[in-house]
Length: 279
Image 1 (tube, rainbow, N blue to C red):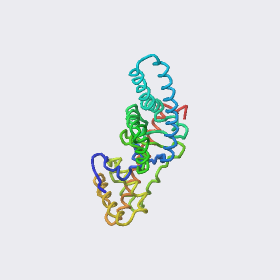
Image 2 (cartoon, one colour):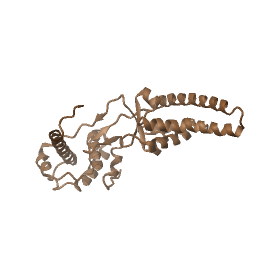
Image 3 (spheres, one colour):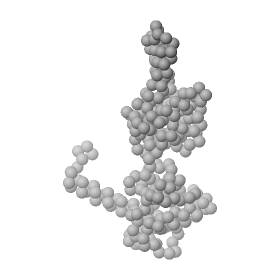
């Protein structure tokens, strides 16, 4: 499993299920499962079918005395409006929620955990028209994609860079690594500020899941991550310590410094601006 450089963008392989905060803290968002997504999709499809029936009836009334070509054109406009324009508009205005998602407590978010925009909603709707509505498919590609995806993504999610979370489940903050006491003095003096956020999350992921890894994978992955970390840390750690001890010390020290910085910024903001009346 290669480790890439360039601002930490290559570390998604280690932290692909998490959202990274500004302090390099990994937050696991509760991904909506395939069954929840399917139930939500069925609700949305029932609502769309009702709208389609209403659209067909309306077109029939409006074009009763016109040509068949006009009726066909209006019907196509109605179908596109109901299956593409309406879902895209609703998801844009509600920041990722449709009738089905609202009923089941789901929401569409970007891959980085942020709210979606019109671009994401339109992309999802356009691809959704193909994978959900066209007669040869009728939802089969979306179901297969959701089953094989670790985030239950359908094809529209892959195209838009989004996935669906469950808002009725609690977000989990991964437990932070603890500082090994023999390395505390070194870590306090070391410069760890230059570490990319992606690398920080990769190390946190590795340390939290190292116990579940096979030794044949755990040792080389730990060495690989340590080699990357030492590129951004100075001075080098004292010799003789296990790689996971050094990684834990670096991440624990970075977290301590981030916590102190945030506390100072919050104290300064309170002195200058005052307490938030809505807090």
